[in-house]
Every structure is written in C-alpha cells, then in structure tokens.
Length: 90
Image (cartoon, rainbow, N blue to C red; front, side, top):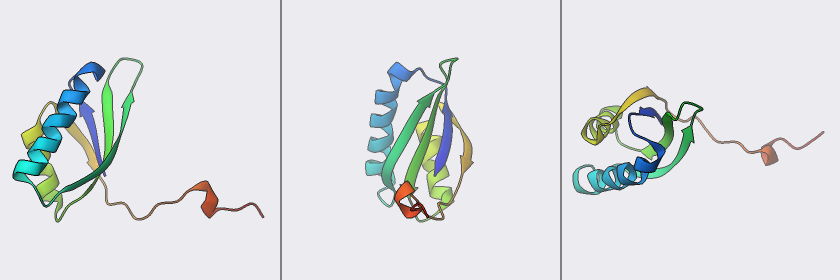
C-alpha cells in the first residue's frame, strides 16, 4: 500500500488518476492497481492510500516518480485483510 500526499486539489485528482493508469499501462504493465482510498483533510490536502500488486517496491517508486505531483508518505506490505465478520460476538 502506498500512502501519498498530493500537491493538487481534489478537483484535479481525476486527471491524476488517468495519468497514473496510463503510466502503468504504458510503462509498468507488471503493476496491478487494485484500488485507492482518497481522503481530503480540513486544509484541502489530498492523500491517497493505494493498493498495488507489484514485483518490487522499486517499481512502485519508479511509477510514483513518473507520476509526480505528490510525495510518498510510506509504502507498506499488506499482511492481510479483516472485516467485522471475522470477529463474531462471543
């Protein structure tokens, strides 16, 4: 999962998403963009939490460099997923 802080407004994010997808399709076909969560704080700062499947962290970082207009706050390997259904009441 890549956590990013963007240097663009919320209104500009659709164009960023299109460029990200195009960059993956044309340059990094080994990367699979699974989904992203977009959040906007009270100051209007856009952050994303993007889930990718990729062969290496370096490839994800290269894609991020090519995309631009953001900083990477962190890259984390997802260890697993849970939902409330995984924890039934006793």
